Image (cartoon, rainbow, N blue to C red):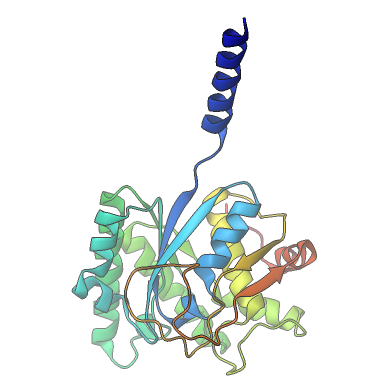
Length: 261
């Protein structure tokens, strides 16, 4: 009798383990707009706190273009060796506005298309995450160009620029930008993460969370190698913690435009 009780206990224990959701994996590819504030770790923490356990990796470098990552094969290798369920691409701020010249647009569009194809072939869902421009006309043009690039690549586009402009006007007290006035501050990093979550899961997150990972500054020490988002930072003075309470989530949610049908 005791043996049967023990066997039943073991069966229930195994059943409980099997019911535990296994963390998904996301790979973020881009530049300092991704690593400043550590969007990959922020998104993983937000997703996990809201019922979708996730681990993030990244291939990032300051000022990098997606064409560089396509040419060096780093993304293709990561997809083959550590296949993610989600691949998030973000282009350098002016690339799709043809800065410094028309060839930059052509290379960017081709790289987005190629990396999206590689991600899809590896079994990943692929998203193009938008960047931002403060000037109204430039912001609208950027969204148009990013949307076209995403459509050409056959992937969903997560627009940021106009949502950011609207949010900064409505809530100027929040820390939208880093100290340099250009890179993401905590509020913008959270806005990016929420927009990604809404695109992936079809709803806004509700629960706050903490990020236990490097909260990178513009000077990060990072290079374009694959690394876990919560891996120890190259520079010892990098902050390692930030809180995003429930009230902050709800406030950013309220600032966002309605989801597109």
